[in-house]
Image 1 (tube, one colour):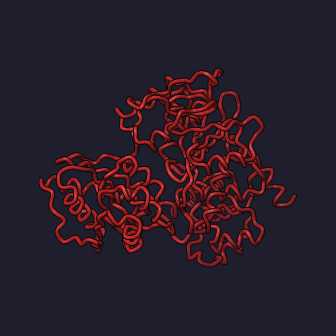
Image 2 (cartoon, helix red, strand yellow):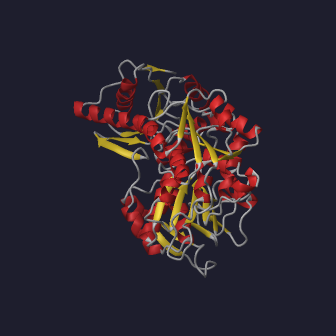
Image 3 (tube, helix red, strand yellow):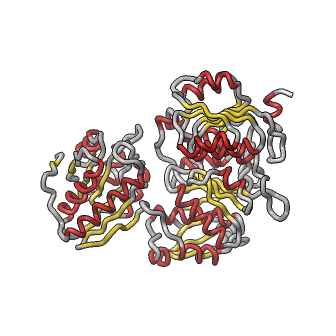
Amino acid sequence: MSVDERLAGLTSWNSDWSGLRVAVLGLSMTGFSVADTLTELKAEVLVLSESADEEYERLLPVIGAGLALGSLAEVPPALVAFAPDVVIASPGFAPSHPVIRWVRDAGIALWGDVELAWRLRDKVVRADGTPADWVLITGTNGKTTTTQLTASLLVEGGLRAAPCGNIGVPVLDAVRDPAGFDVFVVELSSHQLWYLGQSRIEGQLFPHAAVCLNLADDHLVWHGSAEAYRDAKALVYRNTRVACVYNKADEATRRMVEEAEVVEGARAIGFDLGIPGPSDLGVVEGLLVDRAFLDDRRSTALELTTIADLESVGLAAPHIVQNILAASALARSLGVAPEAIHSALQAFTLDAHRIQVIARHEGITWIDDSKATNPHAAASSLRAYPGAVWVVGGDLKGVDIAELVADAGATARAAVVIGVERDGVVAAFRRHAPGVPVFEVDAAETGQVMNRVVEIAAGIVDGEGTVLLAPAAASFDQFSSYADRGHRFAEAVRGWIERGNADDAGGAHTAH
């Protein structure tokens, strides 16, 4: 039996994985979950990583896996000597990475952790003997919130649901959980989807339902082009069995569904903030309604909740309402009742750093949306808070910010620009929004950046208005993560409040 023939037959936890030679690239949480799973299945595992968490490094020999630490800038001799049957890469490894290029050129099977999890999905089965259903969620923005929302709606509807994947819990860990689940709600990044696209078994993953929430340029360096990024996102719909949920306000997601190879009978389910047609979810006179999952969808609709009820729990920002509609469509495709959706939403809270109100003090509302790490996400925040003082900048990941500045950014009261490389952001304002005052924060120390931001913003607002941290950029040029950036912003706001006054901008220089 050839290696390819053997790999094609490995579609169950109960398949014979013993002796399979697997190289695992990367020793993050995902990499360790892969190694831990495969050693349990008696495969021969070698993990290759440039660095290792001390705990993972200690545990690998305990579980029976090998470890080769060192540079991966070139193909390591240890990988060549190991002669793997399959390579499973952590999603951080880009298609252009030298080791990934070597694997593909050598004709070695290349998987991600999601494909492995799907092959092993029958580790724990439901009472009827079948594996849990999978619901897939991707999009440039809103993935994590929609994943959490969907899982909450399913649980309220009486199903055992596990949010997993890019949300922080490896899918393999959820699959191996002895408690068992009815549904895995799997958040997928474009990186994970690209790896699914490398599968040699065409269409091996068959989700119950899937959604791409939206599409905007992001991760272009990793993928190499906007087209490649789009193609990776579109893979979320491949082989969907029941419901392909798409954003009617985003034509790219509609085209993805139209072009997808799906199981016969799968339906296209649209959502947006307008009046829904049959097979859609939308908003009618302040009501969120379902016209897709009912018998008489031509002439009636089912009420899910109201904008007023969402306002009472801080979920009424337009982009959050869109996420709620998408999550509701996914939940309804699995039979969750409208009453359960309404009840779950009344108890749901957004994670920190997602349009989170930090404080309201002396007429100023301070909002942390540090999770807005790209222009598309920042645009949603700016539309929710027009006229805000906008804190913007960071690592733009190769994305042009000009369109955002010309559109949503032009409505800002002022801009406070952070980041190591601020020139491009400042130039975009000069060209596309010359009427918006721009201030730069040139603090060299990370610990001082947000203190200066708050001082400047408070001076601009001077007693009434909103200050919005929605950077439209990644954080790693000055902070350890978007969460670190948000925490430091909140600490600076609290410090300003404790000082009991709104200092003027003193020392800030106007860019124009």
